[in-house]
Length: 332
Image (cartoon, rainbow, N blue to C red; front, top):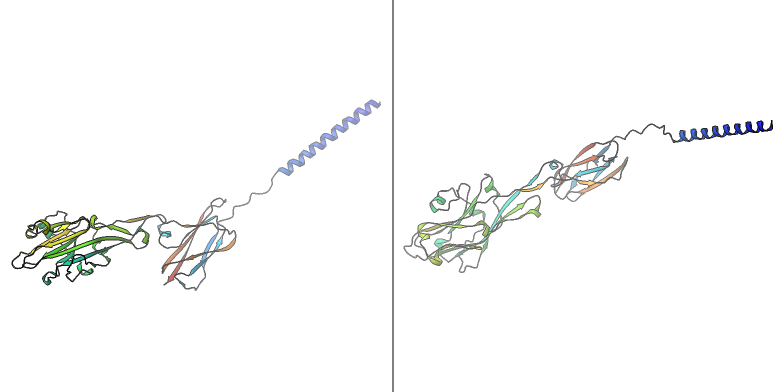
């Protein structure tokens, strides 16, 4: 009887232990189950504005008040190189063509003071024959420059022309030829005219660092085209061209010498286009999240600008993009 009671007691104990273990397992399983509803991604929000009724001037600090929860913001100030309008298209900078040179006239003979004129043509066909050159349409631009107007005793005294904008010559979308037309009056004394440092510079208006010399005197590749009497001169009396000088010479003929002229003509001149590519934004890494912050910018030139903020989410569950534009006028 005692043995039977003992066996029964052991069985009851085992049942109780198994039941306890199952209950503990059920409790653990329930604790590991996440019964919460997944969080809905927060919608992208962003805004940008400036204080109202403020007059900005060049050099002032413009403060943009920003509010939002974006991961990333790109800023376009509206200035050259940072303009939203050019984010997807290439920008070609405006180029001014500025010509300069030094000139010298000898000797002291009042009949040949106006012995040289600077001309240009857009219909010259590139055939360097005197009759052909003379038949082209040549228009004068001498008056734009400071040309030496006093005949000098030596060939070492030069007058600087100044740097003159000749961009308007290229508006026909055709190559431009430049030419010096030089003359020696009939029955006059010797005439000499020299040009050096003949140079065309490309001035990039909106980005001066890109400005450079487009053509030096040697690169213009001047060629003399002479009338028969000028071409009949011999040796050192002939007009000449070196890598540094264009020289017109009319020999001594004090009484009955013939009229002489010649054209020193350049090769075809074209203006390049400066392609700066697409404008890119300034990337801001906002530290705000559901808070107000600001961004400061200084405009260096007067004008009207469209500042643009491009807000986006990169890693959050609510992708998207918000564009905010702010018009700003900067006074001198």
